[in-house]
Image (cartoon, rainbow, N blue to C red):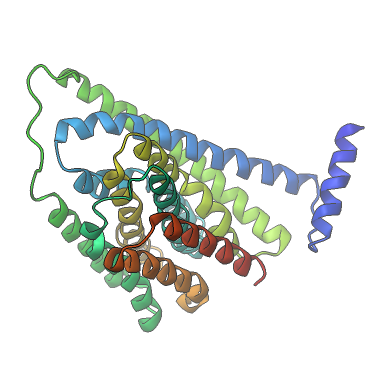
Length: 336
């Protein structure tokens, strides 16, 4: 009886927004929620073991944050992209990638600025990420201008990613670990296996995320862009948020900044490049003008961070502005 009353209450609330759901729809929503939780939890598990590899590589925080952590924390977006293309809904992946970029700057960098500001330590090293931020702002604009979604563009984006990684990692900034390091080198293969195992679970969770999101979009009448830009983008960006909070607690704000901003470039070069390149084997066309609103917020949030890079100011204020901008993005997309 309680379950029936609860279902009626949920349906009444949803009908207020013009949404009608049956029991099967509620099951899809439950699957989506559980899958998103699995994405976030498993990604944090993967990151935990990546930290051991960071100590062995001895690169600087900015280099590792972009070249390693930003790729690892973008694994959910990569998995979503793979299954979205396989299911014939590549626009779902693009909505996820662009929505994740708004989340990474609006929420992840916003929280970084806010929490670091309250600790009286504004994030350091943001100026080192100026090129990455500029590229991740220009690429979506170029896509809309040229309305291109073809394999050649995909391979071009992959080339940009490779060049960016090379530039960030060509110089090691830390000395090698001594022989008596607390991380035995013989444990490296086991750590890599754990990372691969965690990544496999992420892929499975992403598979259920995409399938349930598409079902909800079809049943409720929402376009895949809505589900991708809001719900999935939030879930797949939770690893960046959790890492940022942990990094601030450890005083490693450079690592957190490089991961958040680097993830944006990873999304728009490595993952989007793979999506477009896949059209060589499974042709598709996408009207990129559908993403103008999301791209606008990518540019707005990037400009706010750019202003802080060049002019400075109270990082707590910048953090609040970024978070509020993301809230506005959510509402404008919801009311569209």
